[in-house]
Image 1 (cartoon, rainbow, N blue to C red):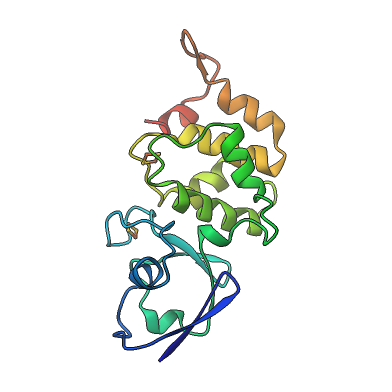
Image 2 (cartoon, helix red, strand yellow):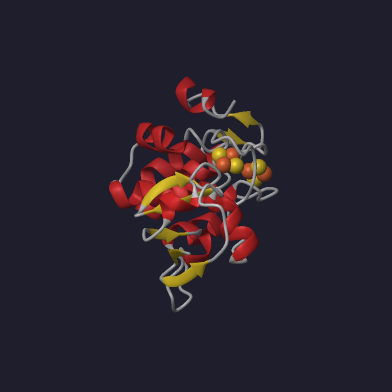
Length: 181
Ligand code: FES
Ligand code: FES
């Protein structure tokens, strides 16, 4: 038997191979389907959860390594009273998701970043989020939303202002645009 603590609740997991990936346990045994299966090999970030507040690819983490640790999933990101995490609120305000498949993982990586750095720079964001792939290319809005949640209003303007109805704002630097390619 394995004891898992997920989003503050304790679960006893019986009769499962200790090598079972945590993602399988969350989705198939606990009904927490926010974390998604993308690649299954630690390359896309869709399955990201927190293990003791650090971002972790749950497709690679065996059940045995998650036992008796503090696990947080996207379902536990909001406060127990239902108040959204500032990042979730910013995601809504900036219309970040497109298909949505990657977004739980994106949010969990961003939340871990803000726990470590209250006012991340563009470089901090690129570093923390580089392992989270979005097929829909929502990177620009993700960056704006992270700055928004962090209260970096000047940075939001700089990011959002790169794209205008008539095309790319020529004042945007190549680094910003390259990261959107
Ligand atoms: S499904 Fe885990 S990193 Fe892609
Ligand atoms: S919103 Fe579609 S994969 Fe990211």
